[in-house]
Structures are given as C-alpha cells and as structure tokens.
Amino acid sequence: MYTGSGRGLEAVIFDLGGTLMYFDAPFPEVLADANAALLDGLKETGLQLDEQAFLQAFDDRLEAYYDERASEFVEYTTLYLLRSLLADWGYSEVPADSLRPALEGFYAVTQAHWLIEPDAVPTLQTLQQKGYRLALVSNAGDDADVQTLVDKAGIRSYFDRILTSAAEGIRKPNPRIFQTLLDYWGILPGRVAMVGDTLGADILGARNAGLFGIWITRRADTPANRAHSDTIQPDATIASLNELPGLLENLGSKG
Image 1 (cartoon, rainbow, N blue to C red):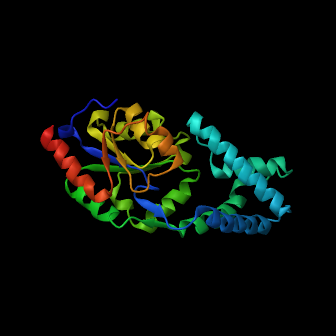
Image 2 (image 1 turned 120 degrees about the vertical axis):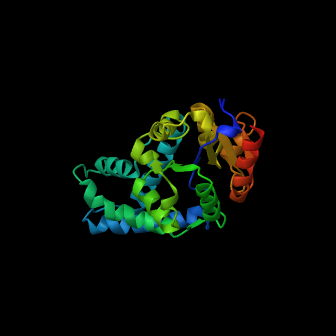
Image 3 (image 1 turned 45 degrees about the horizontal axis):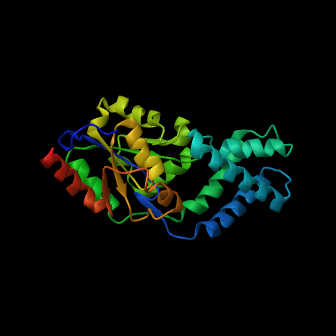
C-alpha cells in the first residue's frame, strides 16, 4: 500500500498501451492480417504448414498462455511460444534468428494501428521540465515490438528506462518489475507514481510495490477492469494525460 506523501513524489512510471498510445482499429480484424503476415514469413523460411490448422493452434496457444500469465505474472515471449508450437509440429530445430523476420512481419501489421495520444508528448514534456524522473513499464510478449512503438511515437528521450515484461521475464503487477526501476533511481517507492489504464496490472502493481497508483480511465472500459472495479481502488483517477501535471502539483501542495 502507498505510504508516501504527494510532496515527496519525484518520479512517474507510465504504462504504454491504453495510456500513452491507443489502438485505432478492431483488434480481431488486425490480428487476422497479422497472422497472414506471420504465415508468409514462416513459409519464407521453408516451413511446410497446414495454414488454417497452424493459425488455429497458434491462437489457441496464445489464449491459453494469456490465461496462465494473468495469474502467474511470468512472461514468456511470443518467440518462445512460437518455437514451442513449431516443435510440437515437428520443427524442433528452427533457430530463433530465422523466426524473427516472421515475427517482425506480424508486429509490423499491429504497429501500424498503435497511435500516440495527442496529449502524451505535451504531458511528458511538462513533467520532464518540472524535474520528474520518468520511466515506462509495459506488459508485452515482444520487447522489440515495444521498443519500435516507442521510437515510432518519438518518446524515447523522455524516459530514463523502458522496461518490458518480455525482457524482464515478469509482468505487472509483480512488484519486482517496479523494484528494478526503484533500484536504478535510488528512490523510495512512496515517492513514485504509476500511471496506467489497467486495474489488475498497473494499479494493483502500484499497490504491491508501494507506489502511488493513478488510473487513467479514457480507454479503461474493459471487462477486466469492470471485474476489478470493486476490489482494486486507485489512489487517484484522471480521464486524460493532460490532467496529470495538475494532479501532481496539487498533491505536492497538499503534502
């Protein structure tokens, strides 16, 4: 539980998807195109696959893993899941490097639909100018995908560190992923705020790590958030990022 004071807040950690960026299309439709790109990439490596059966198996494998990681808070990369599925299909010796182009084709399709929120850069600029330390922590199955999105949005320069669950092997709300940043900064948890759209990852994660949890709600009307609305309560709520500097200033003035 957060035990610091508003006056002592020195750093802000941001979530990425649903917080700083948003997805501009129906995901199932985009996923179908991404799967097609993945198949094209796999065929270029020489793999012979029953396309529809393989895609169904890949989707089933992802869905089962998504259910598992929601309770275990451990991250296995999309590359790992793809290699394990190919092994089940008799391709146990496929080098990871040969699969990266296929995954890059998959993610290139989804990346085209992730857009920066209009108030993200102005907010980051303001907080940086006010002297806050900034970082980003994203739950994601592919670190390179997140890094590409950050560069596409032009926001890398605002952050001291950019951590992903794919690279760290653990997911929010596991407090260890936040502790990595606290150790890097040398800042006590009560002096750090976490801003995100997901109650079960961002806000519970903030609580677990002793951070000040700020829930941004404009993209937060999801089944998972509705399920947690009675049990996970943020320390503060904002509807948009442009409210954040004023909130932090108000917290500081009140102590």
